[in-house]
Image (cartoon, rainbow, N blue to C red):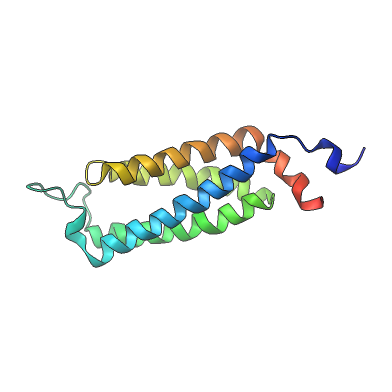
Length: 136
């Protein structure tokens, strides 16, 4: 039996998870640069910062997390084993990071949380199937 014979339609979930991870990374980079260059943009009116650190610091954390997500999403799409493991950890960390921003900018955060949930599902349930794509 050839490797291409074991390819199922569920591999599409993994590819979608990789694309969603890269998209969440791009959203994090955009959100991070906005926080770095305009810290008042995310500050809710009439209240102090949501987190105990400055928004510029959170912005750089988001940029770094976004870059890691984009690179790992690329690895997931091409069936790299390291990317499956790192992808689940990064998606969980990204979900926690965006949850901290939910009161400042709820639409962005809920969108990023949705991508993270899809990525975690795709990688934990069907992550092994993407390895077949490397050999097809």
